[in-house]
Image 1 (cartoon, one colour):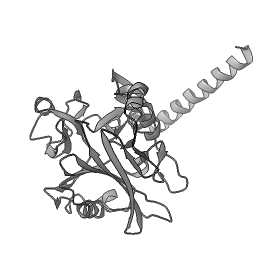
Image 2: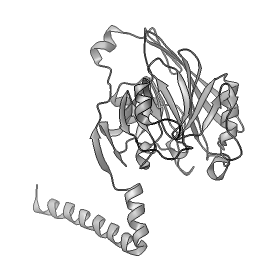
Image 3: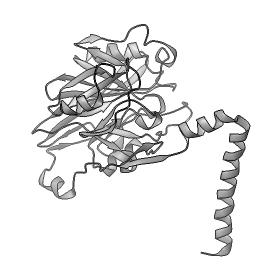
Length: 305
């Protein structure tokens, strides 16, 4: 490497360090908090994402594979598009077969803080047929995290924090962290625990109330949700928003739509610019943070088939 190129790299690094230092000094202690919460990445634990090998793919060829449908010996996925409340909503109807399960994958195969990648990149790395963004666990210091049967975080966010538990048998349940520990959930065969929320549907009824409909929840935004209709039949849902084509959904509107799909349990995941659906190698929706450009936001994790 030439001295000129080395000097250029060092100069860029120095400018970045000085810029961060300047912002920190300008904002004082709050600047450190902002940097720690949103910028500085920390790796806590290596996490091996489960990957479908090319050899197993070749022995399990899809009988159907189009832009809106996929089926093989283990799963069936059908993509449908709806429009409600001046918003496009994309629904993946999923049927799992032969003991298949809903899986999770982490950015960079790392459990940590602010360790991120796009939904499509993470999905591609594990050969996912279908994926949606998860709960963005890495933006918070608390809230239960169990992924693919591994306990990664046991600190409770609050007693009232509603989590979605996906058990090894494929069933789903909404729990409150004040009612059960993460260790107890693991002992009861929890396979995934997602801690964003709130619950949208419980026992087939809308679970969102006026206390949930505050701030951004009342506003129309891109949304991501997951739900179960009955045994082995699920829906992965993503809505667009913040564009001239799609205004987005409130939490109540999302819950009412999930009820329309006849789900018995449904849960709200990270939304806004994170909301992304990936299917058969393509991004299905139009992810956007500010409405000015269509671009994925990097996230901590995905939920996938």
